[in-house]
Image 1 (cartoon, rainbow, N blue to C red):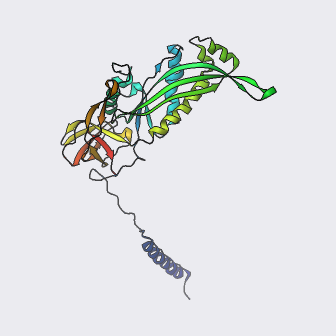
Image 2 (image 1 turned 45 degrees about the vertical axis):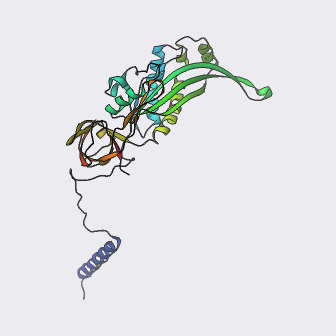
Image 3 (image 1 turned 120 degrees about the horizontal axis):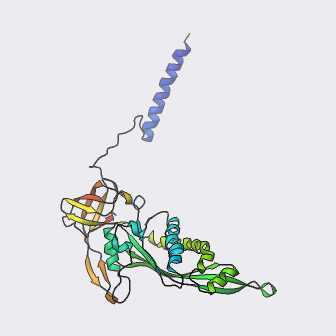
Length: 314
């Protein structure tokens, strides 16, 4: 009589044979393959694992409201609402960019326009992909008739007029420009306060204003998300080259990028200057990564230097 123990052993052996054959047919293994790691690895980054870093500069107050009210309601809330509306990018406060140009009053040309060339240079140095600027132009009270015939009634609104500009750090060109008019419903006493045009009148409905900023942020971020990630060489030539992005942009040791020449500087209208994109001049690999910078080594080419632009390999 065959023992139950022997039958169990035969069944187990048969099961293992069948399982092994199944795995071989499916291309799997009973043993986990080892993974190589270290400086010699080559990783291909994609737009999904790199983080665009965007500087949100201080906006201008061209409206009648007081500067303290503007700072509290718009400037401070602008960052919080834009950050919430832009979960896929890293939004940086002016004072956290580490750059004096981006953290203060933005430079202007002789004609009074934002000097896009200077803020692009500052953006490159700070490891930013783009720079958001803007102005609060006005807040005005508006009354509109709502309803039909006997049911018609007057409704009060606050109309917010803003200008939003987004500049590309690689070229200095404006990649987004929009005059935004956002209308929010307010109570009658809030409308009366607004029509009085006292500097503090907006405090009556500041929460409604900040809610509107979220919608504005979504509109801006939808445009930024379409722009490709780019990195910038800030110093070095030959063996030791530093770029202004690091762990904060999702970079890892071993990632390989195409490098492009800084290009020519061209002049436009009203004294503006721009970077004209250059030709591909090599490939580089990330050799060391720090929080806000990284070092690369040249794999191909020889003219990768300060001012060169790194892009994801196609």
